View 1 (cartoon, rainbow, N blue to C red):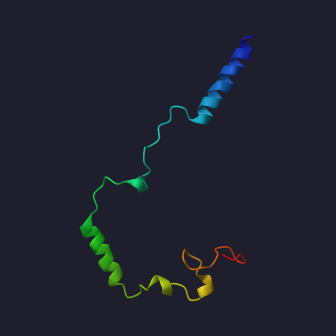
View 2 (view 1 turned 180 degrees about the vertical axis):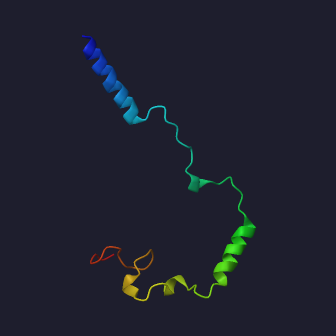
View 3 (view 1 turned 120 degrees about the vertical axis):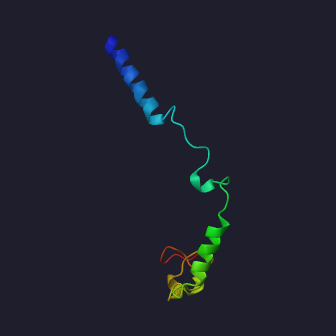
Amino acid sequence: MISTWVGIAAMAALLVWLLGVGRRQDAHPPEDDVETPIDHAELDAAEREIRDDPDAKAAADAVDNDDDDWGPGSGHSPIPGVLP
């Protein structure tokens, strides 16, 4: 009789642990941070760095072969042999 209750309690504890009851999660993931102010000086410096980079090229020129460009808006499927 006692072993039955011990088994039930163990299974209940396992179920609680698997479901993560009591585990708190942040309300918003870090990429959804809208409260931190934008550092405009850092953003301007990063844009100048890219603008002045001699090796930088336009996104349209990033691939040598048009068939290798499968990104959004390219009209190509990311899966070879599958039409968009």
